[in-house]
Length: 162
Image 1 (cartoon, rainbow, N blue to C red):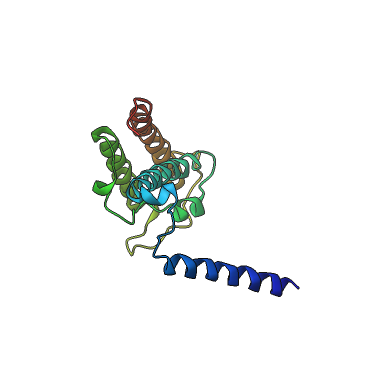
Image 2 (cartoon, one colour):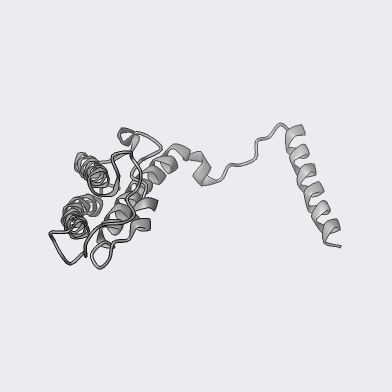
């Protein structure tokens, strides 16, 4: 019964497309599809925003205990150049700084000389003179710097640059 209904729906859809083709009419595109470039620009901007927040969150999570997996799953790379994203000058600078700071942080504290992830750290995160304590301290400092850059990002959003 269900197969018959599904086959009927597919057949009706094909008949409607054939009728439109015969009449040489184009189906009306949804409003969003008409403005696809603007939609892509908005999606690119939101992807940058989400990555900045994910990087900030990954640093923030290191306050109590070192969360290796949180760092590993945070991707600090964009699938497109940042210059293609419609940002204000302040937002672009803030994003570039966040990406640069986070990449330096990963290389300094979370990657081995061979480029592998570090998964174990000597010492206790509460002891600042240990490896784990150094990572925690650097995470807290980076979190504060990223927070400053995110404030700039959102100040621009509130000022109408969307």
